[in-house]
Length: 241
Image (cartoon, rainbow, N blue to C red; front, side):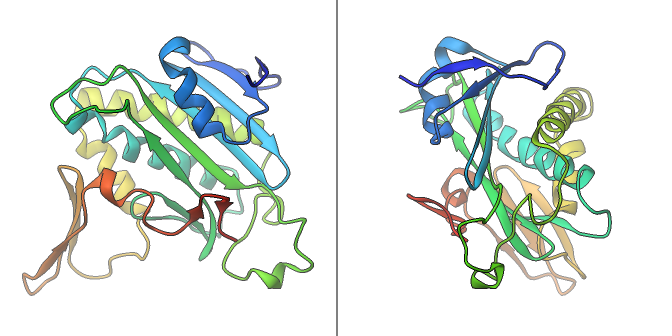
């Protein structure tokens, strides 16, 4: 059992309930607690080298549709990061789950659904968990891992600000999804995809990313839940530096 206590210094309005956890595997902790703690619970973990936060959602749509909440939360995460970093640096998403900052890996996100949930089922809960490299203090020199970076090295604003802004963006995009349709969210998500699409059209169709070239050719990604976890941003032991 991991000790959990109310988070300090992060002030959010309802429907969010913030809790700090000492579970380094915050994703696993959130999966265990999601059914009991319920929608809007936002767990936060800060430890050596790692900053993570996990949000519990309770959808009203079947998994085929509600899984798009992962893309919504990725958009909120990227926008929150962009709001708390140097303005001239780009925050991008490597489809569908890796966060890239100024061409370096900063972390990514994981998505949990109830075991055995089918596309036509309305899940009791969903869990979105962001995992970010807080620091790389254990490296002898940053150049030892040139493909990654950290919140500390890039002088991001404090975690409390980042988490609060993430929650605000989640509420914003939930509202847009409800009143304007998912395109209002996916269009923002597509702006963050790395690399930028210089020619052609890129869009989200169902749970896939589709790119169409000017010549009419195109490619379609793997399904969202199949693609998540395949970008190589983490292993069983954590984020790849």
